[in-house]
Amino acid sequence: MSLITTLDHTIKELIQQTLEEAKQTNQSVIVSHIKEVDAIDPLHFLASSEELFLGERFLWSTPERDFTLAGVGNELILENNHSTIERFSAIEKEWKRFKKRIINTNSKDKQDGTGPLLFGGFSFDPIKEKDPLWEAFSEAKFTLPTVMVTIINSKTYLTVNKLVTPHDNLLDCLKHFEQTYSQTTHHHLIDCEKVNEFSTIEYKTSQWLKAVDKATNEIRLKEMDKVVLAREVHLKFAEKVNPYQVLNRLHKEQPTSFIFGFENGLQHFVGATPERLIKKQDNEVLSTCLAGSIKRGKTQEQDIQLGEQLLKDAKNLIEHDIVVKMIKEALTNCCYEVISPKSPTLLKTKNIQHLYTPVKGYVQKGHSLLSIVENLHPTPALGGFPKEKAIEKIRELEPMHRGWYAAPIGWLDAEDNGEFVVAIRSGLIEGHNVALFAGCGIVAESNPKSEYLETKIKLKPMMSALGGVDNE
Ligand SMILES: C=C(O[C@@H]1C=C(C(=O)O)C=C[C@H]1O)C(=O)O
Ligand SMILES: [Mg+2]
Image 1: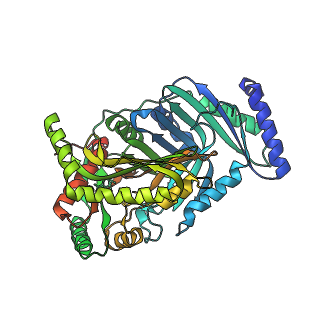
Image 2: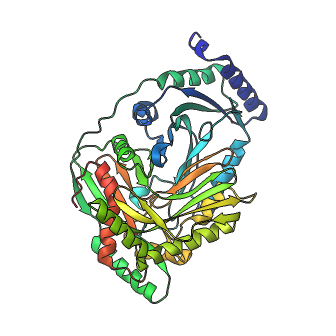
Image 3: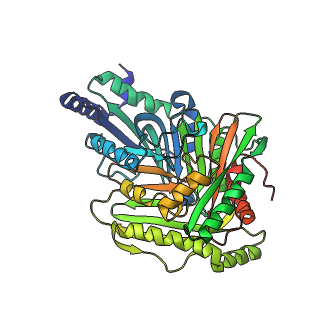
């Protein structure tokens, strides 16, 4: 085959070696090849992969855009529907099995975020009765992409993975790499200027307001300290929504947030969240306490004044402190050192300002990234306090099903490095329909009307990315 001659010698040897190992052990082996390439636009790459990899694409980008992952193809899927915390450990166990059988090229100077890694997420509450909107989403689902673009600062890397089974043959494996490399060079452009028309259907608003009222009373009666209640808004568009256009706009309009997109069949779960749950690099972990909110000002002066007001506001400080306390406690259980500033500062995104406290820790041996995700989820920024009581209240009072909203989403590699955020400021796109989600931390001093206005601000990033008008 003349085609195969363009592949370099080392890949051929590597594939040969992988195939032999798969046959000898009678088990599948992951082979992964990384190379540095010329700049690729991640969104064009994703949009261009529609024909080959429809339903199997993801995007991840960190604030300031210094780290981006764009993956296509489900080379391997790890998923489960456990209704207990086992949904975290089951992914870890399965990944451990595969991790033992990875053959990696150029592993010496491998950068974090290149090579074989899993991208995916979890549901918020596996016990809540399923809703048709989220039916296709498992309680935990991760994929090893067939092809992935990694952009670190201004360098671009391409990873091609293949799950080699004992029944594969050399020529097919070689073709996989050859074809993949030739396909990733053709890209379409995305039209981002288009304005979309939609009608908004407010969803069970009065029920949500009543739930806030009820929760506030229960908190005043000391049944719990805090509970986060979310609501859902449905939008119907005249035309099919292009998820990559939406992601492109989020990417540009929300530079201080993480951008994520997870395509699951015909549905796309996308968002721009400012809230990191946990990042782990070797034994160093970083988490973010983000709770307490106020709008941005129309002028710089007003903006500063609103920020000052938030920093002193008793109700918001209570919301925030509950989160700091819990995250520090959870990290103290797995770290030998936990460091955080004494008082919060402000984190400003395009549409909102939050109270912000970063927490850093050094993990003791034996604690994995997913075990920390399991212990943190949900933090009182998304659930409440005490944790179990709050989850039960959400299940009882919230007039919606959260699905993957407010739950951990992110990536992890074979060395147990990775990062998870909480999937807020998000929406689920399917054809002409989009469901958006936003919630608020309810404490004793909460007032349903102002919490409602807070959810409206939190819906803005997605509304704007969808082409809707900023009407306030
Ligand atoms: C629940 C959401 O946001 C959370 C709630 C906040 C609050 O109530 O002040 C602030 C940040 C987030 O932790 C959401 O955006 O949907
Ligand atoms: Mg709040």
